[in-house]
Image 1 (cartoon, rainbow, N blue to C red):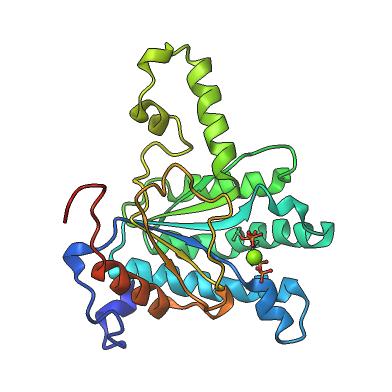
Image 2 (cartoon, rainbow, N blue to C red):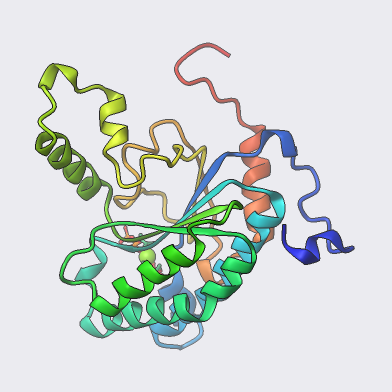
Length: 248
Ligand code: IPE
Ligand code: IPE
Ligand code: MG
Protein backbone atom coordinates (compact mmCIF):
# COMPACT_ATOMS: atom_id res chain seq x y z
CA UNK A 1 0.00 0.00 0.00
CA UNK A 2 1.27 3.44 -0.89
CA UNK A 3 2.19 5.17 2.41
CA UNK A 4 0.17 8.31 1.61
CA UNK A 5 -2.95 6.22 1.10
CA UNK A 6 -3.40 5.98 4.85
CA UNK A 7 -3.63 9.77 5.12
CA UNK A 8 -6.60 12.02 4.44
CA UNK A 9 -6.08 12.16 0.68
CA UNK A 10 -8.90 12.83 -1.76
CA UNK A 11 -11.39 9.99 -1.63
CA UNK A 12 -11.59 9.80 -5.40
CA UNK A 13 -11.90 6.03 -5.34
CA UNK A 14 -15.30 6.58 -3.66
CA UNK A 15 -17.98 4.36 -5.08
CA UNK A 16 -15.61 1.58 -6.09
CA UNK A 17 -16.57 -1.76 -4.56
CA UNK A 18 -13.25 -3.13 -3.26
CA UNK A 19 -14.64 -6.67 -3.30
CA UNK A 20 -15.32 -6.51 -7.05
CA UNK A 21 -12.12 -5.03 -8.40
CA UNK A 22 -10.97 -6.19 -11.80
CA UNK A 23 -8.19 -8.66 -11.20
CA UNK A 24 -6.21 -7.36 -14.15
CA UNK A 25 -6.46 -3.97 -15.87
CA UNK A 26 -4.71 -3.44 -19.19
CA UNK A 27 -4.07 0.01 -20.59
CA UNK A 28 -3.24 1.25 -24.09
CA UNK A 29 -1.40 4.48 -23.37
CA UNK A 30 -2.26 6.46 -26.50
CA UNK A 31 -2.33 10.09 -27.53
CA UNK A 32 1.13 11.36 -26.58
CA UNK A 33 1.83 12.75 -30.04
CA UNK A 34 -1.47 14.63 -30.23
CA UNK A 35 -0.98 16.00 -26.73
CA UNK A 36 2.36 17.44 -27.80
CA UNK A 37 1.09 18.71 -31.17
CA UNK A 38 -1.72 20.58 -29.40
CA UNK A 39 0.99 22.47 -27.50
CA UNK A 40 3.22 23.08 -30.50
CA UNK A 41 5.78 20.66 -29.05
CA UNK A 42 7.64 17.78 -30.72
CA UNK A 43 5.98 14.37 -30.31
CA UNK A 44 8.75 13.24 -28.00
CA UNK A 45 7.61 15.80 -25.40
CA UNK A 46 4.31 13.95 -25.31
CA UNK A 47 6.09 10.70 -24.49
CA UNK A 48 8.05 12.46 -21.75
CA UNK A 49 4.82 13.86 -20.29
CA UNK A 50 3.36 10.37 -20.29
CA UNK A 51 5.71 9.35 -17.48
CA UNK A 52 3.77 11.28 -14.85
CA UNK A 53 0.53 9.78 -16.14
CA UNK A 54 2.00 6.31 -15.85
CA UNK A 55 3.30 6.72 -12.33
CA UNK A 56 0.18 8.42 -11.01
CA UNK A 57 -1.84 5.55 -12.50
CA UNK A 58 0.50 2.95 -11.02
CA UNK A 59 0.28 4.56 -7.56
CA UNK A 60 -3.50 4.77 -7.83
CA UNK A 61 -3.64 1.10 -8.80
CA UNK A 62 -1.38 0.15 -5.89
CA UNK A 63 -3.46 2.21 -3.44
CA UNK A 64 -6.61 0.57 -4.70
CA UNK A 65 -5.10 -2.88 -4.28
CA UNK A 66 -5.15 -3.98 -7.91
CA UNK A 67 -3.36 -7.27 -8.49
CA UNK A 68 -2.27 -6.84 -12.09
CA UNK A 69 -1.77 -3.79 -14.27
CA UNK A 70 -0.40 -4.03 -17.79
CA UNK A 71 0.60 -1.05 -19.92
CA UNK A 72 1.25 -1.07 -23.66
CA UNK A 73 4.48 0.89 -24.09
CA UNK A 74 5.74 -0.06 -27.57
CA UNK A 75 4.10 -2.23 -30.20
CA UNK A 76 5.64 -4.46 -32.85
CA UNK A 77 4.21 -1.94 -35.34
CA UNK A 78 5.74 1.12 -33.68
CA UNK A 79 9.03 0.40 -35.50
CA UNK A 80 7.30 2.03 -38.48
CA UNK A 81 7.70 5.43 -36.85
CA UNK A 82 10.47 7.86 -37.82
CA UNK A 83 13.88 6.59 -36.68
CA UNK A 84 14.33 9.60 -34.38
CA UNK A 85 11.13 8.85 -32.51
CA UNK A 86 11.95 5.14 -32.19
CA UNK A 87 15.41 6.01 -30.90
CA UNK A 88 13.90 8.44 -28.41
CA UNK A 89 11.41 5.84 -27.18
CA UNK A 90 14.14 3.25 -26.65
CA UNK A 91 16.28 5.68 -24.64
CA UNK A 92 13.28 7.06 -22.77
CA UNK A 93 12.08 3.64 -21.67
CA UNK A 94 15.57 2.67 -20.62
CA UNK A 95 16.08 5.80 -18.52
CA UNK A 96 12.58 5.49 -17.06
CA UNK A 97 13.47 2.07 -15.69
CA UNK A 98 16.69 3.41 -14.20
CA UNK A 99 14.97 6.43 -12.63
CA UNK A 100 11.86 4.66 -11.37
CA UNK A 101 12.68 1.09 -10.50
CA UNK A 102 13.60 1.83 -6.87
CA UNK A 103 10.31 3.61 -6.41
CA UNK A 104 8.42 0.67 -7.89
CA UNK A 105 10.39 -1.65 -5.66
CA UNK A 106 9.48 0.43 -2.57
CA UNK A 107 5.83 0.08 -3.56
CA UNK A 108 6.31 -3.70 -3.50
CA UNK A 109 5.51 -3.81 -7.23
CA UNK A 110 6.68 -6.81 -9.23
CA UNK A 111 7.69 -5.63 -12.70
CA UNK A 112 7.51 -7.95 -15.68
CA UNK A 113 7.88 -7.52 -19.40
CA UNK A 114 6.13 -9.11 -22.33
CA UNK A 115 7.11 -8.79 -25.96
CA UNK A 116 9.77 -9.90 -28.37
CA UNK A 117 13.38 -9.38 -27.50
CA UNK A 118 14.56 -9.26 -31.06
CA UNK A 119 17.72 -7.64 -32.37
CA UNK A 120 16.00 -4.31 -32.84
CA UNK A 121 15.68 -3.80 -29.09
CA UNK A 122 18.99 -2.28 -27.96
CA UNK A 123 21.00 -4.52 -25.63
CA UNK A 124 21.13 -1.88 -22.92
CA UNK A 125 17.33 -1.72 -22.84
CA UNK A 126 17.18 -5.49 -22.43
CA UNK A 127 19.73 -5.21 -19.63
CA UNK A 128 17.62 -2.62 -17.78
CA UNK A 129 14.57 -4.80 -18.18
CA UNK A 130 16.39 -7.78 -16.72
CA UNK A 131 17.75 -5.70 -13.84
CA UNK A 132 14.30 -4.36 -13.01
CA UNK A 133 12.80 -7.83 -13.31
CA UNK A 134 15.38 -9.27 -10.91
CA UNK A 135 15.17 -6.37 -8.44
CA UNK A 136 11.41 -6.72 -8.07
CA UNK A 137 10.92 -10.45 -8.65
CA UNK A 138 10.30 -11.20 -4.98
CA UNK A 139 7.73 -8.45 -4.47
CA UNK A 140 4.28 -9.50 -3.39
CA UNK A 141 2.22 -6.42 -4.27
CA UNK A 142 0.87 -5.50 -7.69
CA UNK A 143 2.36 -6.99 -10.84
CA UNK A 144 3.10 -4.25 -13.36
CA UNK A 145 3.63 -5.72 -16.80
CA UNK A 146 5.19 -3.53 -19.43
CA UNK A 147 4.34 -4.64 -22.95
CA UNK A 148 7.39 -3.64 -24.96
CA UNK A 149 7.93 -4.63 -28.57
CA UNK A 150 4.71 -6.51 -27.96
CA UNK A 151 2.19 -7.56 -30.56
CA UNK A 152 -0.80 -9.82 -30.00
CA UNK A 153 -0.20 -11.66 -33.26
CA UNK A 154 3.52 -12.06 -32.56
CA UNK A 155 2.63 -13.52 -29.17
CA UNK A 156 0.31 -16.06 -30.79
CA UNK A 157 2.94 -16.94 -33.39
CA UNK A 158 5.50 -17.39 -30.60
CA UNK A 159 3.03 -19.55 -28.65
CA UNK A 160 2.45 -21.78 -31.68
CA UNK A 161 6.20 -22.08 -32.23
CA UNK A 162 6.72 -23.07 -28.63
CA UNK A 163 3.90 -25.64 -28.72
CA UNK A 164 5.29 -27.17 -31.92
CA UNK A 165 8.84 -27.14 -30.50
CA UNK A 166 7.58 -28.95 -27.40
CA UNK A 167 6.29 -31.71 -29.67
CA UNK A 168 2.70 -31.51 -28.44
CA UNK A 169 0.43 -33.77 -30.49
CA UNK A 170 -2.22 -31.78 -32.41
CA UNK A 171 -5.17 -33.47 -30.69
CA UNK A 172 -3.69 -32.56 -27.29
CA UNK A 173 -3.71 -28.84 -28.04
CA UNK A 174 -6.45 -27.15 -26.06
CA UNK A 175 -7.16 -23.56 -25.06
CA UNK A 176 -5.21 -24.24 -21.88
CA UNK A 177 -2.20 -25.34 -23.94
CA UNK A 178 -2.22 -22.06 -25.83
CA UNK A 179 -2.66 -20.04 -22.60
CA UNK A 180 0.29 -21.86 -21.05
CA UNK A 181 2.53 -20.88 -23.96
CA UNK A 182 1.78 -17.16 -23.90
CA UNK A 183 4.53 -14.78 -22.73
CA UNK A 184 3.38 -14.86 -19.10
CA UNK A 185 1.39 -18.00 -18.36
CA UNK A 186 0.67 -16.75 -14.82
CA UNK A 187 -1.05 -13.61 -16.00
CA UNK A 188 -4.82 -13.66 -15.65
CA UNK A 189 -6.79 -12.37 -18.65
CA UNK A 190 -7.58 -8.66 -18.32
CA UNK A 191 -11.06 -8.00 -16.93
CA UNK A 192 -10.84 -4.42 -18.09
CA UNK A 193 -9.02 -2.79 -20.97
CA UNK A 194 -8.72 0.99 -21.12
CA UNK A 195 -7.65 2.88 -24.21
CA UNK A 196 -7.03 6.60 -24.08
CA UNK A 197 -7.10 9.27 -26.82
CA UNK A 198 -10.48 8.48 -28.37
CA UNK A 199 -9.27 5.68 -30.65
CA UNK A 200 -11.65 2.74 -30.66
CA UNK A 201 -9.39 -0.08 -31.66
CA UNK A 202 -7.14 -2.78 -30.24
CA UNK A 203 -4.04 -2.06 -32.38
CA UNK A 204 -2.68 -5.59 -31.96
CA UNK A 205 -2.69 -5.48 -28.14
CA UNK A 206 -3.72 -8.65 -26.24
CA UNK A 207 -5.68 -10.59 -28.87
CA UNK A 208 -6.13 -13.89 -27.08
CA UNK A 209 -6.41 -12.36 -23.63
CA UNK A 210 -9.09 -9.76 -24.46
CA UNK A 211 -11.68 -12.38 -25.41
CA UNK A 212 -14.05 -11.38 -22.59
CA UNK A 213 -12.54 -8.15 -21.31
CA UNK A 214 -14.72 -5.13 -20.73
CA UNK A 215 -13.49 -2.31 -22.95
CA UNK A 216 -13.49 1.30 -21.79
CA UNK A 217 -12.50 4.06 -24.20
CA UNK A 218 -11.79 7.58 -23.03
CA UNK A 219 -10.99 10.74 -24.99
CA UNK A 220 -8.38 11.76 -22.42
CA UNK A 221 -4.93 11.87 -24.01
CA UNK A 222 -2.43 9.68 -22.17
CA UNK A 223 -0.26 12.53 -20.74
CA UNK A 224 -3.43 13.92 -19.05
CA UNK A 225 -4.46 10.53 -17.63
CA UNK A 226 -4.39 10.29 -13.83
CA UNK A 227 -5.50 7.82 -11.19
CA UNK A 228 -8.99 9.34 -11.12
CA UNK A 229 -9.44 8.31 -14.77
CA UNK A 230 -8.45 4.77 -13.79
CA UNK A 231 -10.99 4.93 -10.97
CA UNK A 232 -13.65 6.24 -13.41
CA UNK A 233 -12.98 3.28 -15.70
CA UNK A 234 -13.23 0.84 -12.79
CA UNK A 235 -16.55 2.37 -11.71
CA UNK A 236 -17.76 1.96 -15.30
CA UNK A 237 -16.50 -1.66 -15.24
CA UNK A 238 -18.45 -2.31 -12.04
CA UNK A 239 -21.67 -1.05 -13.66
CA UNK A 240 -21.39 -3.58 -16.48
CA UNK A 241 -22.96 -7.00 -16.52
CA UNK A 242 -20.56 -9.66 -17.72
CA UNK A 243 -22.27 -12.71 -19.15
CA UNK A 244 -19.49 -14.73 -20.80
CA UNK A 245 -21.95 -16.07 -23.33
CA UNK A 246 -24.42 -17.23 -20.72
CA UNK A 247 -27.60 -15.55 -19.52
CA UNK A 248 -27.67 -12.76 -16.93
C1 IPE B 1 1.27 6.48 -27.54
O1 IPE B 1 1.12 7.76 -28.06
C2 IPE B 1 2.72 6.12 -27.33
C3 IPE B 1 3.22 5.06 -28.21
C4 IPE B 1 2.52 4.44 -29.11
C5 IPE B 1 4.61 4.70 -28.08
P1 IPE B 1 1.29 8.04 -29.61
O2 IPE B 1 2.72 8.35 -29.89
O3 IPE B 1 0.71 6.94 -30.42
O4 IPE B 1 0.42 9.36 -29.77
P2 IPE B 1 -0.58 9.71 -30.95
O5 IPE B 1 -1.53 8.57 -31.07
O6 IPE B 1 0.25 9.87 -32.18
O7 IPE B 1 -1.24 10.96 -30.50
C1 IPE C 1 -0.91 1.45 -29.73
O1 IPE C 1 -0.94 2.78 -30.10
C2 IPE C 1 0.44 1.07 -29.21
C3 IPE C 1 0.83 1.67 -27.94
C4 IPE C 1 0.11 2.48 -27.20
C5 IPE C 1 2.14 1.31 -27.48
P1 IPE C 1 -0.62 3.27 -31.60
O2 IPE C 1 -0.70 4.75 -31.58
O3 IPE C 1 0.63 2.65 -32.07
O4 IPE C 1 -1.83 2.64 -32.42
P2 IPE C 1 -2.47 3.06 -33.81
O5 IPE C 1 -1.34 3.20 -34.80
O6 IPE C 1 -3.16 4.37 -33.61
O7 IPE C 1 -3.43 1.97 -34.16
MG1 MG D 1 -1.16 6.58 -31.10
